[in-house]
Amino acid sequence: MITRVLPPEEWHKLSVTDMTNIGPAFRPEDVQIVVVEDEGRIVATLGAFRVCHLEGLWIDPEYRGNAGMARKLMKGAVSAVRKWNDEWAYGASGTDHMNDIMQRMGGVKMPVETFVIPV
Image 1 (spheres, rainbow, N blue to C red):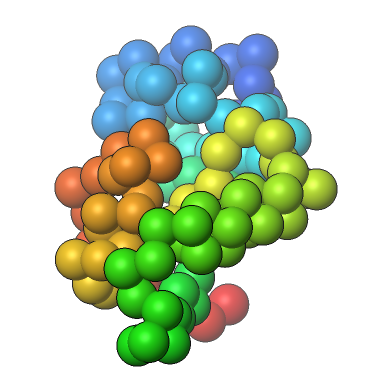
Image 2: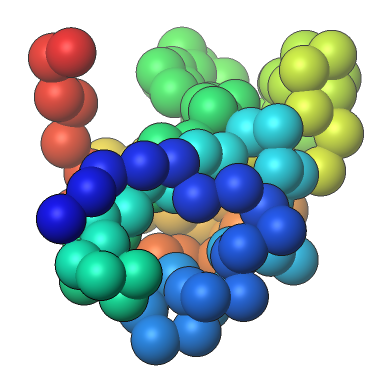
Protein backbone atom coordinates (compact mmCIF):
# COMPACT_ATOMS: atom_id res chain seq x y z
CA MET A 1 0.00 0.00 0.00
CA ILE A 2 1.12 3.53 -0.72
CA THR A 3 0.04 6.92 0.60
CA ARG A 4 0.16 9.95 -1.67
CA VAL A 5 -1.50 13.26 -2.48
CA LEU A 6 -3.83 12.77 -5.42
CA PRO A 7 -3.22 15.50 -8.02
CA PRO A 8 -6.28 17.36 -9.39
CA GLU A 9 -5.97 15.66 -12.77
CA GLU A 10 -6.72 12.37 -10.96
CA TRP A 11 -9.68 13.62 -8.89
CA HIS A 12 -11.99 11.73 -11.25
CA LYS A 13 -10.77 8.61 -9.41
CA LEU A 14 -12.65 9.86 -6.36
CA SER A 15 -15.94 8.78 -7.94
CA VAL A 16 -15.85 5.66 -5.76
CA THR A 17 -15.59 7.77 -2.56
CA ASP A 18 -17.61 10.30 -0.57
CA MET A 19 -15.55 13.10 -2.16
CA THR A 20 -17.15 13.04 -5.61
CA ASN A 21 -18.07 16.76 -5.58
CA ILE A 22 -14.62 18.06 -4.68
CA GLY A 23 -13.80 19.46 -8.12
CA PRO A 24 -16.54 22.06 -8.54
CA ALA A 25 -16.54 23.13 -4.89
CA PHE A 26 -12.89 24.01 -4.30
CA ARG A 27 -9.94 25.55 -6.08
CA PRO A 28 -7.21 22.92 -6.58
CA GLU A 29 -4.62 25.11 -4.86
CA ASP A 30 -6.73 25.01 -1.68
CA VAL A 31 -7.06 21.21 -1.48
CA GLN A 32 -4.82 18.24 -0.97
CA ILE A 33 -6.53 14.87 -1.18
CA VAL A 34 -4.50 12.19 0.57
CA VAL A 35 -5.19 8.68 -0.64
CA VAL A 36 -4.06 5.25 0.35
CA GLU A 37 -3.87 2.89 -2.60
CA ASP A 38 -3.51 -0.85 -2.71
CA GLU A 39 -2.20 -1.98 -6.11
CA GLY A 40 -3.50 1.25 -7.70
CA ARG A 41 -6.96 1.01 -6.12
CA ILE A 42 -8.01 3.82 -3.77
CA VAL A 43 -8.91 2.26 -0.44
CA ALA A 44 -8.99 5.40 1.76
CA THR A 45 -9.16 9.18 1.35
CA LEU A 46 -8.91 12.26 3.53
CA GLY A 47 -8.96 15.84 2.29
CA ALA A 48 -6.91 18.71 3.68
CA PHE A 49 -8.54 22.04 2.84
CA ARG A 50 -7.18 25.56 3.18
CA VAL A 51 -10.23 27.57 4.15
CA CYS A 52 -11.37 31.00 5.17
CA HIS A 53 -13.27 30.57 8.41
CA LEU A 54 -15.75 32.99 9.96
CA GLU A 55 -15.81 32.63 13.74
CA GLY A 56 -16.42 34.58 16.92
CA LEU A 57 -19.64 36.47 16.20
CA TRP A 58 -20.52 38.69 19.12
CA ILE A 59 -23.02 41.54 19.23
CA ASP A 60 -23.55 43.79 22.22
CA PRO A 61 -26.97 42.95 23.69
CA GLU A 62 -28.14 46.55 23.12
CA TYR A 63 -27.48 46.15 19.36
CA ARG A 64 -28.84 42.66 18.79
CA GLY A 65 -31.69 42.70 16.30
CA ASN A 66 -30.27 45.76 14.51
CA ALA A 67 -30.34 44.52 10.93
CA GLY A 68 -28.31 47.45 9.58
CA MET A 69 -25.48 46.81 12.04
CA ALA A 70 -25.51 43.07 11.28
CA ARG A 71 -25.35 43.80 7.53
CA LYS A 72 -22.36 46.13 8.06
CA LEU A 73 -20.59 43.47 10.12
CA MET A 74 -21.17 40.71 7.57
CA LYS A 75 -20.27 42.98 4.63
CA GLY A 76 -16.98 43.77 6.36
CA ALA A 77 -16.34 40.07 7.05
CA VAL A 78 -17.04 39.16 3.42
CA SER A 79 -14.61 41.86 2.29
CA ALA A 80 -11.96 40.44 4.61
CA VAL A 81 -12.52 36.91 3.28
CA ARG A 82 -12.25 38.08 -0.33
CA LYS A 83 -8.64 39.10 0.31
CA TRP A 84 -7.86 35.36 0.49
CA ASN A 85 -10.67 33.58 -1.30
CA ASP A 86 -13.36 35.17 -3.44
CA GLU A 87 -15.62 32.14 -3.68
CA TRP A 88 -16.63 30.94 -0.22
CA ALA A 89 -15.89 30.83 3.49
CA TYR A 90 -16.55 28.22 6.11
CA GLY A 91 -18.52 29.34 9.13
CA ALA A 92 -19.26 27.46 12.31
CA SER A 93 -22.19 28.37 14.48
CA GLY A 94 -23.09 27.67 18.06
CA THR A 95 -26.27 29.76 18.18
CA ASP A 96 -29.59 30.00 16.41
CA HIS A 97 -28.84 33.69 15.74
CA MET A 98 -25.66 32.88 13.81
CA ASN A 99 -27.45 30.02 12.02
CA ASP A 100 -30.06 32.51 10.85
CA ILE A 101 -27.45 35.03 9.67
CA MET A 102 -25.46 32.45 7.72
CA GLN A 103 -28.57 30.96 6.12
CA ARG A 104 -29.78 34.42 5.06
CA MET A 105 -26.36 34.96 3.44
CA GLY A 106 -26.90 31.84 1.32
CA GLY A 107 -24.97 29.49 3.58
CA VAL A 108 -25.64 25.78 3.29
CA LYS A 109 -25.76 23.75 6.48
CA MET A 110 -23.42 20.79 6.36
CA PRO A 111 -24.33 17.56 8.20
CA VAL A 112 -21.08 17.37 10.15
CA GLU A 113 -19.60 17.88 13.56
CA THR A 114 -16.53 20.11 13.72
CA PHE A 115 -13.35 19.37 15.64
CA VAL A 116 -10.10 21.25 16.19
CA ILE A 117 -7.25 18.78 15.67
CA PRO A 118 -3.75 19.63 16.88
CA VAL A 119 -1.17 19.01 14.19
